[in-house]
Amino acid sequence: MIMKKRYIFLLLVLLLFVSIFVYLNVYYRASNDVNDYLNSNDIVIVKKDKNGLLFDGPGEDNILVFYPGAKVEYAAYAPLMNKIASNGIDTYIVKMPFNISFFKMNAISDVMKEYEYDNWYIGGHSMGGAVASMVANKNDVKGLVLLASYATSDIDSKVLSIYGSNDGVLNMSKYNDNKKYISDNVEVIIDGGNHAYFGNYGEQKGDREATISREEQQDKAVLEIIKMIKG
Image (cartoon, rainbow, N blue to C red):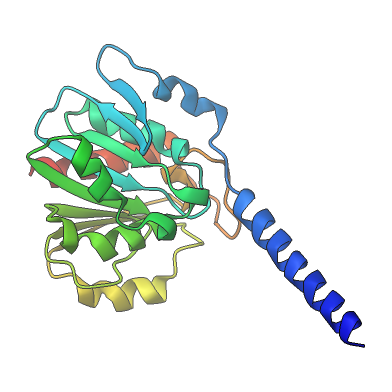
């Protein structure tokens, strides 16, 4: 009887580990159309290091460190970040363990050790934005960019919050409740945009259909981010 219980226990433990392994290794992969944005061009130099991807454009003073959404491959945000960099604000996408920002919450501190900029900004998509908000105050950033996300603690710096009107994933109840954590907030709603179109990883479960193109949604987001950082 004891041996049988031990066997059942070991089997349950094995099933648990298998379930966790499968969960962590099933994620939204970057679509093929990101490849051109992962290569350097005449305007933006793309550098890959141990922590992620740097998009080094013509700007020298400002950088936005970006946390990917949960279970989304970090390269999926290359088009968005490359476009921001080409407009004079360097960007850096953090490569998160198992594509989940909670496993490396203060990743921005590692990036700060590697590069020198006068003004640091942090941001993220979905869960990545929520995690970024948790460490914003700890790292003396000038501002926080939330894409289809919300702050989870008090934010001392200015905040830009962008989401699509057709977002079917963002918890709007929490979004509105958590506005209490932000004192200096600019909110932008992209008409026709959805949750997944901030990145290039296909459609997302539970999302609503966008009525604008992915490129149009990202271009609108880029304009707002440039406006927020450059003032």
